[in-house]
Length: 505
Image (cartoon, rainbow, N blue to C red; front, side, top):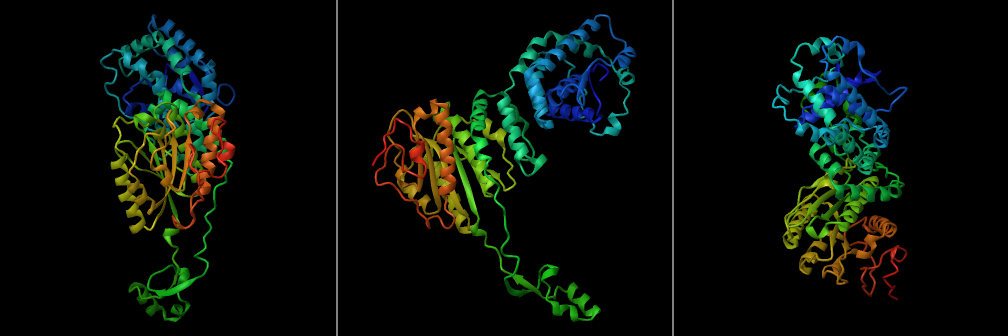
């Protein structure tokens, strides 16, 4: 830290730098703390009053034996920091109030290649996690600590760092702000505050999301949709069963449900009845769990969904997840190709694993019969054992072929809502007429940004309106007698219909 050129007034900046260093170590990047501190502070704080100042620690450097050849390199390091600080990307990132995990991953994107190109064999020797205690870190004398170890490797790293200055600056400029903004949008809107983005963040998923061009395209499309979705207010959870409605006399219960006559016993008898669990309580009516819906979202991740279809499918999925979360429903999300992948459960707190949804990739081919047979077993168990009402959303493509008998059996257990992105052919998959509700997205829609945005918002609005509130078959959705290329017509479909699809009267 004696070589640090970024100074801040708050002492907690050093603790944050130690947290960034520990996260980088988990990703296999062992950098000197002064580099992590300087660039990390610039990514997370604004320059000027109340932020950071860019100047060397002259008093500390005066006590350090700086080799003659290292002084020009420290000047070049300062110029590198000046260039990074002047970048528009850095200025915009500083205004996003990034979490420590995000800063650590951005540092890995910026400095990871530089570290891997450093050929010093001892670069990771003795690396240990740093304490996150201000009392310990704040009392360290940097210059005195500097003299406790051999600095030759450190000067070698400074020389290597300034030789990679242009590459480091380029990596800063390559950061996709839309992806960072999307992650921050879900963070700030989450009801759990620091537990957003799905609680314990998977740094690998976050690293992949920030470095994937496909994820950047999905993030850009999602930002077109989310402002309209976020206009929805979160549904309140009003309690209707704990006000009255006593149904029985029980031996267990809360103190506020105690039968008042129990208080008439003498103290010794009353205490004995407490020990023996013989007190009487009023039992209230139990809220039935089967009145809660389970929103089950399936996203096709096979090779046929690559490119524009993948961007539309995942952007639509994120918007739909956010819409359903604001309505207070529990959501399960799964990718599928030749198998059903891991189930991501999103509770009512709205913890959305955005990095996972952006970066997930699979190379397992296709086996839709196997996938939906397994899904039928799971949904049937949810209905029978947990009394859950399942609304199943499937986002797939026009070459998804499922046996009609399998879809019919699945329809008996869940409300089926399908979104099919057509290829160049106008032929619809055979299972589409069997769905309770379907939306067909033509390939031409994906090439027009405004039309793509409007079509996705129409689907989100229609999906949240069409899902039943009672039993899966209690309120069937009216179907058109004529089934055109866009599938069964639903509310708002005429407004979203493209000029290429004539209306069928």
